[in-house]
Each structure stands twice: as C-alpha cells, then as structure tokens.
Image (cartoon, rainbow, N blue to C red; front, top):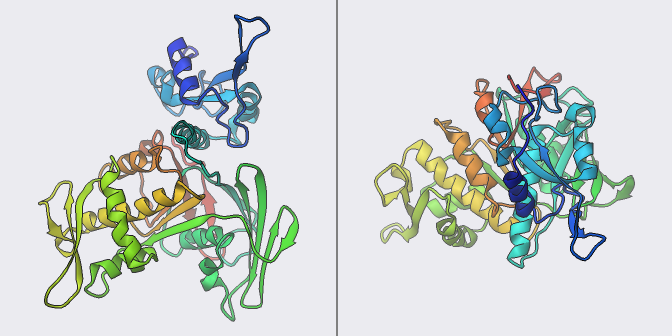
Length: 399
C-alpha cells in the first residue's frame, strides 16, 4: 500500500479546527504567525497521522483502508516538536486512542475559547499500581478520554476506579480503610495542564498519605470532581430518590438536570417529568425514550431503556461539572445491557465537544468485538486472572 498523505484541504481543516495551536495537552503552542516579510506567514504546524500513513509507520494502520487513513478523522494538528515526540519508538508511548483523546480534548477547548468561556484542564494520564492486594504490582495503565475496562466479576475493575478517585476524594477509599484492610500504594500522573505526580498510600484505618511531585502533603489540593453511576437497582418506590442515591446527588439537583438533558442534541431521552403521586406522595419519572411509547413511567420501561435514562442523568451531571472544573465520570455496572451499537452511540454521546470530561466505563464481559471499538476513541483494557495475580492488558487491537 502506498503512503497515504493528507490533502491540502484536510490539512487546512484540521489546522482550523485546532485553532492553529498544538493539540498536545501541555503545549498549545501557536503554529502560525508572521513571517520575515510583511506579506509572509510562518508556520510550524504538522498534520500528523494517528494511524500511520505507511504500513511500517508508527502505531501501525489498524486495518484501515487507504481512504480511511487519509480522512480528517485520522489527523491531529501538532507542533513540529510534538509531532516528532509522538512518533518516537514507533509511537508506543502514544497509541491511537491517546491521540484521538488529545484531539478531542483540544478541539473542545477551542470551541469553548471561541465562545468566550473558561476551559478547565484536568486529565488522568497514567496509573502505576504498586503495593495492593489484587493486581500484579508494577503495572501501568494509560488513560484516554473514553476508557473501557472489561473482564470477569471480581477482577479488580471497581478497585481501579476507587483508587483513581481516591487520589482526589478520600470518600472513594472507604472500602480500603477498614480495620483489617490491606495496604494500597498507587501513583497517578495528572495533567492540569502541567504534569503532576500524585502518590497515594492507604494502610487500613491507620494511614492515609499523599505526595504530590515528591512532596508530602496532608491532602491533594488539586480538584477533580467524580460523578459515579453504578448498576441500576430499584430500591423503594420514589424515582427521584432512586436517581439521587444512584448518582449521590441531592434530589433537587437531579430534578434540575432534566433541563440539561433536554438541551443536549445527542440525548435519546426527552420530555422528562417528575410527578408526585397524589395518593402516596411519591415522585415518579415519566419520559419519552427513543424506540418505545412516549410518556411511560420509569418502572414500565425495559432494562435497556431504564439504563439509558440513568446514563443521560449521569452524563448531564458530568457535562455541567466539566464546564467549570476537571471531571471524571465513572460508570461501574451501568450500562450492563450491551445492545448492538452501544459503543457507537456512546462514543458520539461522550465525545461531543460539550462533554469536557473523561469517562471510565466498567463492564463484566469477556467477549467484545475490539475491532468495532477501533475508531470510536475507546482506550480498552481487560482485567484477567485471579486475586492476587490480576493482570491489566491494554494492547488489545486484533488487526
């Protein structure tokens, strides 16, 4: 296959979408400026390939066709220095999912700047697992904007999310701070936009230590808001309280999120209405969900339809939060029903420029069409093995 280069129109498009700035998170170097003469322009920007232009290039070609390799979706705008950096050592330090995330994050920031709005920066980059009771120590996990963790039950998926969240929020460590809880020691690199090294040590209820960039501190002052949604479990008869408990948000905030959902163009749920039953005083939720009869109450919807409503509320909360502070959305057990096209739908949903947050989705599944996730921006990781020898695998592309 010959080398697939980008057309001049594609290069202009990608440069314009990037605001003529480097898309690498810690850079934002302006790539266009005045030349030496009054009628000249100086440029240092590179329309870099995400999947390689040639078969022997960095990151490989992922089984893409020549036409796909030349499309704007396979192009990221970088300064010349970072274009060289991401291709070093055949691009192993910057796989396609990471570059797709950088591109999406940067374009979202440009959109916000054009709108005259503040764009907070906070990006989970890499987790190193040291002392712990579950995983083989020394493993490193690389994060993108969309992160999918899959594997058998009791394979450490929830623990990973708790340790990541615990680097910022001690309440996420409740399970690891009991009287006989085993020790946990992890390190997280975090961009905001400078690269920071956050070290967390937990030893039962006697010790909780934080270090940032090698310095001992009593708590981590860097902000990352965590929105967490677990599996959908109906407990009680009040829908508003059900959503409030699932999202750990006050009922009044959950009620307010309905307007945010209505205004989001990718939402598949509309006309959300909380109504108080005149007889028992309980609040019921009614909604129009794509693919079913409009106006049904929550408890008459199918499992898939119910999960879609919970997902809409969770992403709406993360979307509002992400406009003003770095935010991580953790989906641990929801969605559980993996319908055809689920990752295609939620990639568009979660990659929308208005969704300026990272996502970790955990699902208990062993059989996934990994190639179908190739172009959808997911960093895919599989947990496998048994405690205390669980292994995390990320290099899962099959073509």
